[in-house]
Amino acid sequence: MKAPRPYIGMWFKCCHVYTRIYLNRDGTAFVGFCPKCGARATVKVAPGGSRSRFWKAE
Image (cartoon, one colour):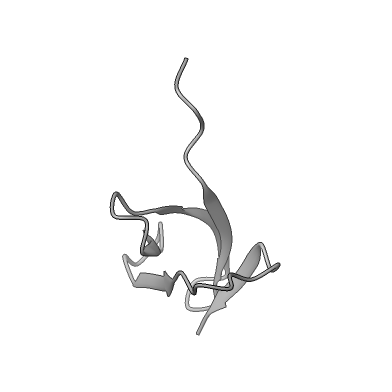
């Protein structure tokens, strides 16, 4: 059984929608798109990380 892909919650302020964005294959950033307008969101992974599981794309 495959391990689930890591994700964070992203609020796309442009269209007032919440969705998950997933860790890229390199493990360097969480990348996703607004499901309504297609705006791209990227959250880079820092060495120390973050405790936040929810982010806002403005």
